[in-house]
Every structure is written in C-alpha cells, then in structure tokens.
Length: 162
Image (cartoon, rainbow, N blue to C red; front, side, top):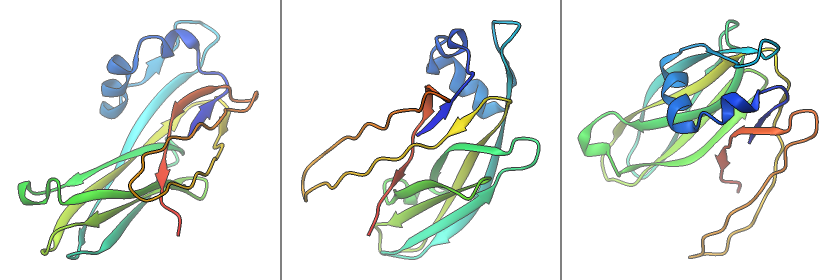
C-alpha cells in the first residue's frame, strides 16, 4: 500500500473512476485547496517475454521528474497471451523502482508489458506492510494501516513470498 500525508481529501473524493484515467494519461492534478500539492504522474513502461510455464519480471525506475513509484499495471501483448499471463507479484524496489512478475500458464512463450505509475509531489510517502498466509484453495484479504504521517491510502501492491 502507498500512503500520502498531504493528499487533499477533496481530490480523493473525486473518485478513482475520474482520477485514475487522468493519472494514467500523465495529467497533473491540482488540489482544490490553494495549500495542497500539485501531483504529476508519469508512466514508465517495459516489455519482455515470459517462457512457457515460467515466471518473468520487469523492473523499471521512476524518472527524476516523478520519483515516487506508487503502483503498476501489466498485460499480455498478444491476444493469445490474454488469460495466459497472470500476475505473480507487484512491488516497490528500492526508493525509485517497481517490479512486476508474471506467470505464463501456457505451453508457449508470451510477450508481456508492465508499467510503473510514478508521481511527483511534495507529499509524504509511506509503504506500510502486512503479511498473511493463505491456505490452499482459500481466498483471503489483509489490511495495512497508513501511519499518521501519511494517513491517506492511495494504492496497494501484491507479492507472493516463498
């Protein structure tokens, strides 16, 4: 999970349905308050090939203009790969990087892409963590709490641990 310290609640209340498409397009979002921060977003992409029945990882670094990684997306690059390339992990690496690992369920190599969502803002950041153990054939959720210094949750991440 990524948490923000000064994210103005008016901006958050616009609803993710309105804000996320703007973020992905790289549109700066200004706070409704004169005191609030301006947030600009960059999407940093990478592509790779995952071999049959294997895992592959793409790692990208956020640029200096938007140094804070807050999430990612991924997808197969061909119609044949859709539904065959699935998320194995998505997590921050270092202070400016993000990694996405995928699993190829098919018997053929598949091309895939992943992108980090990187922010430029003056707000505080925190990456609180929580771990859960899920038994086979069960679904489970977990909640991580944002610290007081960055109380507003913005996004989350997923990572399988050995």
